Amino acid sequence: MSNEVLLDAGAVSRCRRRVHLEHDPAMREVPLAPPDPAAQQRIADASAHRDAIVGRLMDATGPDATWVKIPRDLPAAERVQLTEEAFAAEARYIWGALLPVDRAGHRRGGSELLVHTGDGYVPVLVVRHRITDRGAGAPTTVMTDLDPANRLPDPARKVRSQPRDQMRLAHLYRMLEALGKHEGHRAIGGVIGLDADVVVWHDLSAATWPGGRSALTEYQSRFADRLAIATAAAEGDEPLAEPSRVLECRRCPWWPTCEVVLTETRDVSLVVRGEDAMELRRAGVSTVDKLAALDPADEPPPMNWTGGTFADSIILARAWLADLTMVRKVDRVEVPRGDVEVDVDMESFGDSGAYLWGSLLTGADIGMEQGYRAFATWEPLPTADEARSFAEFWAWFTEVRERTLAAGLTFRAYCYNALAENRWLFGSASRFGEYPGVPKKAEIASFVDSEEWIDLFRSVTDQFLCSHGKGLKVIAPVAGFAWRDPEAGGEASMRWYRDAVGMDGGVPDDVQRERLLRYNEDDVLATHALRNWMTDHAQTSVPYMNDL
Image 1 (cartoon, rainbow, N blue to C red):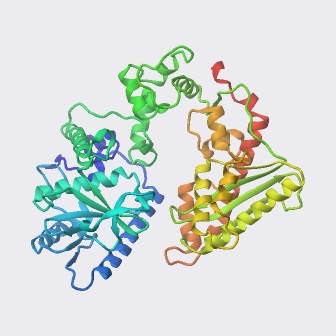
Image 2: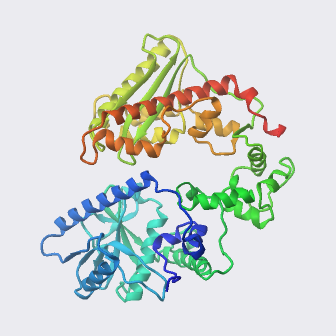
Image 3: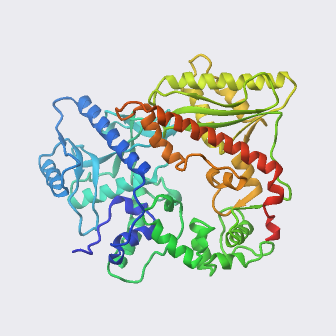
């Protein structure tokens, strides 16, 4: 049974090639990428989140509720046995259930919580991401109400798109169905998210997916595809999934294996991602070389093209072959400049809040100290002290703007990818609106929509083609900038932050605080360097795309 194919719920959302590699006997000894410390930390955070949730649920359901709590660190066989015993006893709540393997259906898996409703069990997932957005219509109950019969359309929430949650619920429904432990009259499952204030209930048979499909229909299609891939791999048949670069590759343990193959074959997905790369292969444009050989002026796409322009993809292929990180799309590069300029970079900890607003003041003298300045809270997020640090940042920022305008000078503020900064500007105004000095959302909107707020990511996107990505860590080095910390990056900063605030019960680490401040300072210095380079040197140092 060593080549027996059993798929967990994650397989239906996973890269098809990864499913092949995980079931190919020839790949068992291939070295994988080392574990990502940030990913391991997310796993630990998710475990702590689950522990907190089950405590609240058990307290809320009262001492008479029948709970079976199965430790996740037990051997799998013991967890399955305890789950079966809980089924036999018709326990109302089963926490940490690991279902018996469904060999006929080739499925394996478990659920944070199974709730007996009288007609069978429904799965409830506990996840550490947000499951709703502002809006209306999400079917919810309060977090401690685990009866889906009580769900009502929520006037303040709409369902956030989290396909993996629904695919996992569908997987568990099919496993419960195979055991005869499912509800016979409906297919439903719940999710408790990061905010832990409601249960969102998903009707898995409702036509909520594109094309009028249900989650169960989508799941069945994906599962059949992944099962065929895994079976072919296990039996040594012709692979049904070849390597292709996708977003998942960045954190995949199999990326070193795929990268070698893609680079050796000069696969077209190195410059064109997703479905477009697959369609190009089907049309015979399988390599970067073949794509680069096409005429960007006259060549129509050989299929339905979805990403950017087809001409740009041809130029990107030529840039990749020439080992150019950037090429100009425009004859002349322009960046709006001001007499007084501020670079802004915000540091957040997941969805918990923004703990640091870093700024760099440069330009004309307006009677305020120039250089880097940080506004931070070192109380572990979430904390009300975040309101204080944000209010101080906004007060300083507003004073810079007012002094600039009073002097008859122009003001510009810059960030790299305004989606992040804008999220926490508006989010801070919403969460801390009653705190003295925190601006109203209208004030934030007035600034964000003005010509004073410049997103350098958009400036780069509009004026350059970037063959290796457009992240600041990729683009700023072209401008000659280097971060002082060799580990500088968003994922690493998450680890530093935990130590800096003593989040795991340790003593707050002042060294890591200084490291975070230095990292943030380098981020604003990077946007400053990039802006100056775009103004003064990009015109002559970056090739024009029509010259390739």
